[in-house]
Length: 244
Image (cartoon, rainbow, N blue to C red; front, side, top):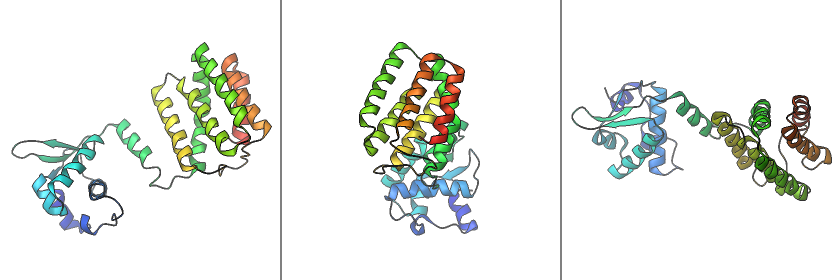
């Protein structure tokens, strides 16, 4: 049974009637196929249909379906098998791929900056510990340069905020843990993108340009330099308490 047949039985809406009119046709088709796979809980290996079936089912041109299929294959959502009995099938997704897709869904799911900052707070200890253990002289030199820049732009709410995030990214970049490093840096990217044009973060206790907050960031770098566990713990507590 194909997705078209299940759709008829389940009474799910067709692509043409879905609330995706603000997207391109191909983007809407990608979203609709992903939605149907999720709603119907289609298992890996399920035959969605042939290109001809799907063009007729969704009312789209072959070129549009081809574009959507390229996106779905790149995301690991589908696989295409040639020959008799071939067509488009639900792919077996790895846990890491599902994690990556979940991160990209943060905006659509309405994740707030506060929620993402809370996750960064939880990850800071591991990031700082890795940075302390693995930093090189070159890393420290770049962190010192960023601190100098941060000091110069600190009184500018927008420039200071962006420089602050560059400092956090550079600290995370030292970690040899690819999962931790990538996840942390992408969350920073998400926060910076969502707060574009803002002069502050909607985070309890956050004051963007106080001297004390600037000193906390200096202390974070000094803790990385010294590799002192207590110094690092103290800096993390103050950083978490007074905001980013």
